[in-house]
Length: 446
Image (cartoon, rainbow, N blue to C red; front, side):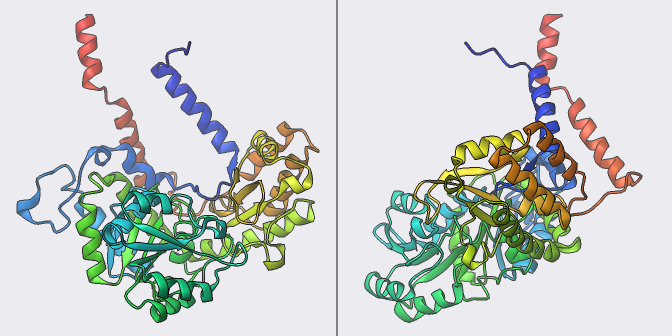
């Protein structure tokens, strides 16, 4: 029988987890950290509020809780996304990458019976795209390639001319190298001129906003989406961008029936993260992710760990795939050993080119945490020692904790700043607030 959890247990477990997180390092490529100031809205009143009145029309403030903070979405988050994403039209409504996928498929995929084309899972396509599209009544065809990191454009041309899809949804999830969007768009335009091309850049989004990857909209894509917590260091949320007013209108007409609360506080937190990204070295951070990933792949290879795509420089982005099975260590065991050493990684089946499971890691959060230079050599030494079980995990965990004593990317608030004092006072006030239910219970008890 499970022991009931008390509020004391909640606070204790949160404190223990926070202590462990501050000593450890996440290398899960689909996760990232964010600054304390960008998390502040999640603790305050906007977390509880709806916001719908984007036009600020006086007759449309049916939900008034977000009225005072309206400008933080419309004059901070949205303009920064337009600027960094180079798109005239932005939706900040999606709650996650998968939620954005559902919105785009529903808005642009056509009516029941329409055909959409996406990337085959063995070439890196997202596991959920085809199933979700079929649940919306759409037919699904796949783009394929001879290897796990490429698409066959001749096959694509034949497929597109034959099925004339409403939408090509480019959905790389397991991805070491990005799709050549410009060539794919040219193929679509030549073979099926009426077909829209949407690029889901969830894993690449921070690299796109930082200029380390080319913007798919510049490459001819009709629309772009991405989650904001992978290579971009923001809240767990997603956005949709386009330069086409008609596409934007279709997205807006659809989102009203798929998304109610769009998590207003997270949208404000996203705006703060975008401001930090623009003004505190976002492009340098994006370039560093790419450089660190390629270097770390080489460092692991030199330490006896089999890294996929060695012949292509290991990766063009933030992910590395490790075949520890080939090195005599089952991926689950490798993950366990790394966790004991303070390093969190993915182990999973379904990585393109892998017969069984592999270990998937990312250098996005380590880069955000400030690791660079010789730090990467030390991290590779710890990583390899953990996988091969050549040093005690406790000693390795202490070395990881030492690596965490770095400066993070983003705005640094001086300890004497009035801004910090105000933020801390807001946090303290939020924690001191006693719920009315507790006061009622106390009154009854007395």
